[in-house]
Length: 487
View 1 (cartoon, rainbow, N blue to C red):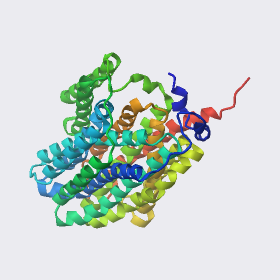
View 2 (cartoon, rainbow, N blue to C red):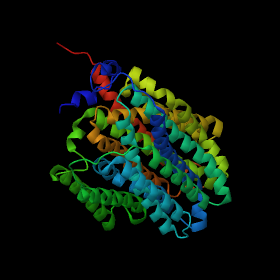
View 3 (cartoon, helix red, strand yellow):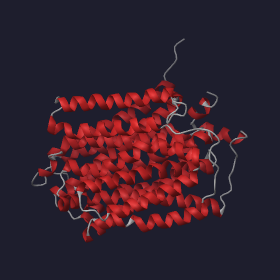
View 4 (cartoon, rainbow, N blue to C red):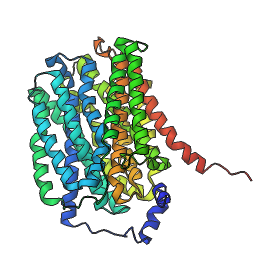
């Protein structure tokens, strides 16, 4: 492809060469309106981080009031994640075709309505359903926000700086959500669902005023068959993993579900190779840097979301910590991301994305390794949990912006929605699958007594392995580059 070299060239030298080309201006003026557009996009990411962390803090309280098991509670997380991940590609493609501004504002309105309904229901199944709908809405706001950002800010220093600011707001939303979730859960878990409503309405109004109108694509279409097969295949795969421990891994229902899920996902890839306007142009998966970025986001999101889920249950259900105390215990990771992310854009310009992603995966792997080495059956906060959270925060700070930059680097504006939707889909779906396996491994963990962490160890072993695999995938190309050549 004509732009393959540009996509894979994310080394520091590329940042020096880029200004010399006509398509990459040396500088971009940051006007007040440009800052305003970035603020709206960052506000939505802030809202997403706020919502995810607030609900995470409230899970034990929700389970107690509605009588939900650990397996059911994970669906409050995975219902959102799967709705989000299953339609991200359709959301990104829809933004490219119908206009980014229109799709962004419409989806944000649905997000606000779903948040309101979620705070009012009294049934666990209905609560999970509202989370799924909310995830569907986020599947359109998230890639659209990122594609608005990547088409508004020129590739290079301006985009890297914007992505760094973008990451800060995500981390700030997550950190704020931990604290706010701890406070609101003390008043009642429903407030964690209702609080995002006015924030979403404010973002909707400001976005309507500031985001410039854009024209829909002249040609193109929707791949509804691809969207249906991908979403249903993923839902069935996660449901199978979660339900298998009770039914048995070799039970006919489990094996049948695995076969159907595999068939649906296989049908998705067959559809993408034949349909005129696919969700994924499969040729993009032949570009090594993009494939590595998508696998890296799986390791980043999958390991961290699952670790947070386990720590939330352990600290509240086993140690009986208050929601606020638990939130403060996990807060250091978010603070590291919030204060570290502003510098990542400059580091990308200087060192390139591959080295920063390796640093991210190394920090994650060391964090989980330290936890396993020092935790025992009663992990101490100062010795074990705090250092782990600091290392995980460092991994996220280095990783998120670097992965996003590598996943969209060199992509033409007409496919920015595809590229951003693809990497976010990988992160959300990967997180859902890893969390499903972790839940299956630690479903009995909350029955432990006396502060015993033993039943959570298999889950921590799994997330550690996921992080190490992410590190290895990024190290191999770098080692090959420096391998001595024999004549």
